[in-house]
Image (cartoon, rainbow, N blue to C red; front, side, top):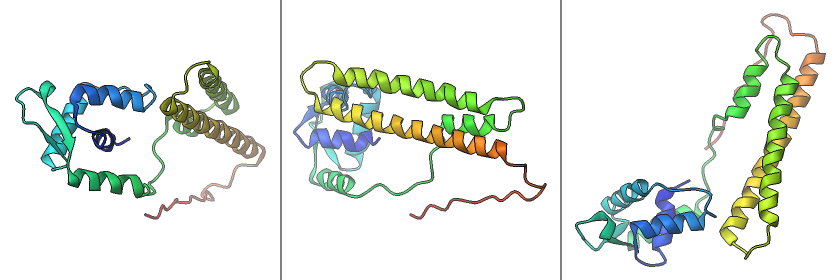
Length: 189
């Protein structure tokens, strides 16, 4: 997540103090991504250095009010409208665990996968309960919950596919020594 651009977005609504930005960032993200106030002030200093925000010039960081500059508005607009570049898959601990489990002698990989699948389904149930709680509609929280449920659903689907692959591999005879084919995934940018 780009804290830099999130702060610019909040400043596009009008001048703010650092503490206000932290509180509004957390509210805008459904209160699920806490932000350290030190990170806010460090980011604001960089934004000011880069000419994307201006401060009222106070001596005390906590008393400074910040506002977005014209250059900051251009930067924010570009960030909002330019799709993120394709990148190689991030390192994922769950994927790594399954890949490593396949190599550990005596490990029931199916059980490793199922243990994680059960946990992910429990997380999905918790998010679904939060979603169904009677409360005033909170757009940021609703978007975060839907994003998390979608992400977790994809994790469950991947675990199911991984389990299929592991079962298929266990049923097939091992390839002859040296006959292993490796493919490299190329991501175009």
